[in-house]
Image (cartoon, rainbow, N blue to C red):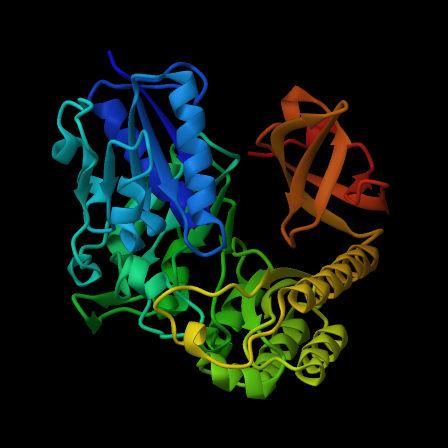
Length: 439
């Protein structure tokens, strides 16, 4: 029985896909083990969104070689699609599989025997037309369910269309079937994920279904207490979807909406499909219907042409908006993107300084959001992580809560009252009553 280990870099979508590929191996009689348990095969799922994809990949390969000098190492994921030949030259890599091939790696690699040189299976991204469904399971208290893949938007800074291909989706029927399978494993929360999930519903290049239809159908699934929408473009987040979440029993009040810049000048340069006025409108619509809703924001600093004045436009815009936290990305040049060819590059030192300013703003926003919610009662889904005798979980509106460890509470939904923010930044609660456990 050959042992196989997995390592995932990057987004929730990658985690869902790794989890599905690992189940394919287990069905074929392989034994899934931890990275350090001398596996015969290593599968490394890579990301290309952040800088240093190559450095990270090399480091993990080196570590794998140390653990199992004769182990077979296969690299899959976005970086593998974008730079297969480059990865093939990394010492220790035995196979590289692109976007169209990664779900067929067991048949393509057959017996996983180490050869003289790396095998490369990476066709052009135009051939990644099939939707491969995926979800993560047994990894966390919540499951990531992939509903959509690829993207038809051509933002100037982004390589994802090159790495994942055109927008395509699973069918609502298939997704409901997967959600029912997940419900049978006693998972309480599903996070709906994809590359551009608001664009859900394209099959074979034609729009057949809509995102609103998907969330309405999922809301009817028995046995799942919570659905969370991962990240959705502001121009695709409709009033209908916001109103639906506001009255739904199972969809939680939490949106993650990429902004990227609070300056219309930069938004236009980036090729984004909205201006800041639309973003502000989405936020006020959400807050009007759900004042306690958590809103997360992606923002990129240091994009070419971002002067100090334009950066301050973003900073002030975010400071005034009733949002809850930021994911800050320092712009980094990507080969084959329009932005990489643009003039007026911002010096790295300035990019880093701006990132730091926004990260401090994010901490303040998060703290203010937590403070607003103190004294209120929410439901927490407790997770299995324990630190210093404490366990953690998230409320429906994404506030991280800590309570005294109690094994009975793991994967349980409990009503708690938020008491105070502790020195680690999570919120302490009145100890949950055990009798309250409800399934």
